[in-house]
Amino acid sequence: MTPRHLHPFALVGELFNDIRSFFWVIASSAVFLRFSLWAWLAILLAGLDFVLLSFWRKTYELTDDELIFRSGILERRVRHLPYHKIQNIQRNQWFFLAPFHLESIAVDSGGHNDKDNQITLSVVPSWLAEVLEAKRQDNSQNLQDLLTAAQTGEKAPESEEASAAATAAVTSNHRDDYRASVASLVAYALTSFDVFVQFLIFFGAFFSHVDMDSHWVKALTKRFSAQAVSIGFFLLLLAVLLFVVILLVFNVIRIIVLYFGFSVNQNAEHLTIQRGLFQKKTLHLAIKRVQAVQFRQNIFRQLLGYVSVKVRIITDANGDDQASRMMPTLIPLVQTKQAYELVSNWLPVVPKDDRQPLTAGSLYQSLTMARNGLVLLWLYLGWILYFVHTGWAITVAVLLSLLVAGAGWHKGHNTGVALLGHGGLVLQYGSMYEKVTTFAEWDKIQSLQLRQSWWLAQRNQRVHLRAEVRSDDSTTKIECRYIQRQQADEIFDWYQQMSHKQFRLKQQ
Image 1: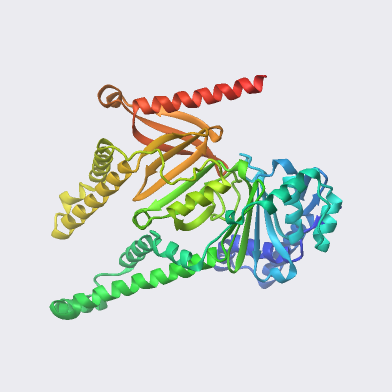
Image 2: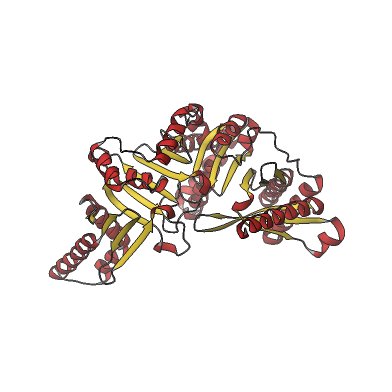
């Protein structure tokens, strides 16, 4: 394949991104610098020339073994990405590009060197992603046959490995596939904590910008005070409820737009996740490159028996789709028992049964974490009561104390760790009224640490167990606090034995 330029539509996107990046510079120059009309025309022409030259210098090429991307004006850059080094392929297609069979492709190599690893092709033909995915799954396939088949829509001749994978995919149980219903997306939006966060942000911003000494605020306060006994409080409560309903409707629409048509499809050893209404997003990832699986339940979903499932994968630092980076959603919302049945078919580290060997956190863990939260709260905010000791301040302090103590109790009650029979580890912890259960195979755990203070060692025989797994372009720490020392030692010994066993196998 000869080097190709990006589609001309990419030029429009690059021009828009440059204007967005330099908007404040242009606006400030227009206000503070008195350029003449000819000077502005010269700047505009120079900017257009730069964008055109940058677009022309970007080319991509497929060879039998790698993807080559060339870019740069003053400094020419050539990036080589072998197909077997591709971690994930992210595809984004706006609705107005679909009739032209064009889309944006981001290819992750999973390196640590920030922007030097991901190759982003802003607007290219859709068949390019299909060829990349086919070569990543089986590099022995003939490139020319794949290109011809992808461009004509015909089926390419398959190698023995690809044929076996395709046969396995056809004969596999179709229940492995999952498609989210609109009802589940609505429930996902209604049980999210985002509404409360948006509510607090709005009211905080509102009161920070309102002048309490202004005429209309005083008049409104006086009117409300005069009618508070009758209908004032009712009207205020009704206004708050109406605003909450508006936020709920906004979040439902936002979630449906983001996750419309959400589906997961397994093809041999790969998963394909699709979602999006106006912008269709597709993520291809290899099952063996999934670092960890997380079942997440806030307190509402925990009470209702629903769970969201996310996966931790390796991506590059310059990915622009935050919803697909770090922790892509595998299942937005489903019943807990069904989630284990579905995910265990895709990812063997997850057991089929939702009854885990985890035991509920001890009373010591709950009391200790509630105490820690209260101590931190009063250290940071308790001194305010010394200066502001009104009834409202005391009421807010009591409510915050109850909220923090409850969060600590919930965190301690949902903290635990256990070994799985097939060489996996399950770690569970709580955070801000959310229970997070993480499943990871031992070889995906980068390191395992035991942390213990002098007091815990001498008095309570407790320890903090911390596991590190790769996520995004770095690592993430998963910590279970105040675990019994004996249980932590057993897990640490197990991890050492598995590591030594793997080392001996490599030496043979």
